[in-house]
Length: 430
Image (cartoon, rainbow, N blue to C red; front, side):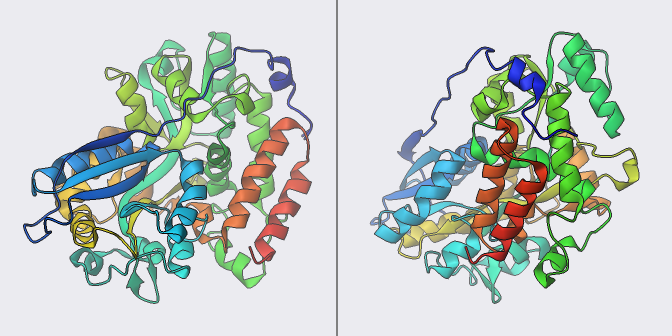
């Protein structure tokens, strides 16, 4: 397949332009902090959260606020890219929030392992929730058996879609690659787009390739990450090549937005909510954001097929969001109380009922929403694989991945060159 600029994308480059909205909203109110011993000095607990988790955090804040009315709480929401870049600097300068989003594992500058290595995270090992962590959660928030974050949800990367939009083009959810490509064509024939794609937002660039690689790489080599660590595998000589090629094929076949590099994450949410696209490949937590824009819209999630053998299809699913406590938190008692609540069954359920995700720490009181059935089934069937960047050795690999996908869509590189760049990044120290 050609690795030059996709002809459809080039022909449609003049399509309508949409303006990205930078979201950073502060919500301030008299909210609580679990327990009357928090203290009057802890009067304003500062939290910074990823904007994609707004619905979840709003719900936790509301539930948390009923337990202790004596502490005010300020929540600021920031874009993923902004947060990953700015949070380490803010913490290092002493200007960081008390509680903040951290990413599980080691994949970016604001990940648990990176911030812990720099001494930015308070050790939460003594908190009650740390005793109950399942293995998949513990593996990405613990270091040397010490816990440095509260895992908040278990989420998958799949196709979030409008059931009415899919019905309008007379189609069912695809289970094979051939069906998927056929559905892309059918959507175009019906005057719509199958999948909104916002590659102008850097972190979005990774999602389709992750969803494809879950099958093309891990469907036949479930121990791929260990092989990479041992030096027995490479990006270039693996199913990652197939994943990248299929990603570009989908663009060539009209599966995506007219101009992915000119489309933002916010645009894609609006496109699905307002019936300009059938769906979007996203982390399941984005379901709630689409729902908020169009409350009456019935949404579902299906696994993105990357081959024609459904039994081999895999889904990226893992601990998606976590929250750390600043090692130098100005309001430590309140911060720890908030962490305790988030790690409790009540906190986990509030977070995940609002966010269309599954609790990171399972409990019997949580009812799985129908839209999450695909994610839950992949988990039960052992067909879920970790988010790839969580197991990469340093943030530079993910950053290189962002850059290479953007270059592929712009026609500035080839699949082979992009994979070689990823291998160089993996082998480097940072």
